[in-house]
Image (cartoon, helix red, strand yellow):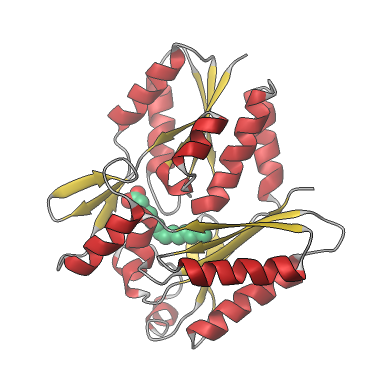
Length: 281
Ligand code: MYR
């Protein structure tokens, strides 16, 4: 049984890593005015943050077309028996559902679609693990089962400098009055049942970051081994400092720095910061 792994661009796994691990990618789009760009393919992360500063119109995003997905599946059907396709949370994008539909349309390949219930490099961790297992010859059902096991310890908290992007795009959930009262502050956010909800109301950026680190520290046990990712929207040196601080304190945590690329950056805005982790043994 030959199984291919697909993820979407919001996992933000660098291209050279995807090539090395044999991970296929379908891109989401970022739209400035009438111009649509496939992220990573047509627009780089740096270009995106420059364009946001230069453009009067704020960008929007869209999921990959069903046509693009069926094309990718038909191409893979030539060499593989099955696909495990891992996507950003179904509560914030139609990408997951789009791949389910595309999977039903393409014959000659079995398609297993996995809802990461998160996004960015946390989604990337699922794709990397799936690629490793597929390479070892595991069946798709076994891969999905391992991904569900990872989900048990997967956590991610993040904050945005300007919450209005999330609210405008309709991706911030929670009681209306509470959400309204958050716009002037820096709440810590997280995913609950596939959707983004405020976790705690915090007044300043500094305190929000400190709270995220406390949540991380509280969930780490000395016996386990963990993987963690500091994720930033155009704040790489701040992210590197957080990574160094975690590495100094925790020798049992393997930390990477990743980024909020164009699609997720559209909804979080420049300056957003997040930390995600899971226990890998
Ligand atoms: C689409 O148009 O289908 C894409 C919508 C993407 C919404 C993104 C909302 C912010 C997600 C934050 C993820 C943080 C993970 C640590």
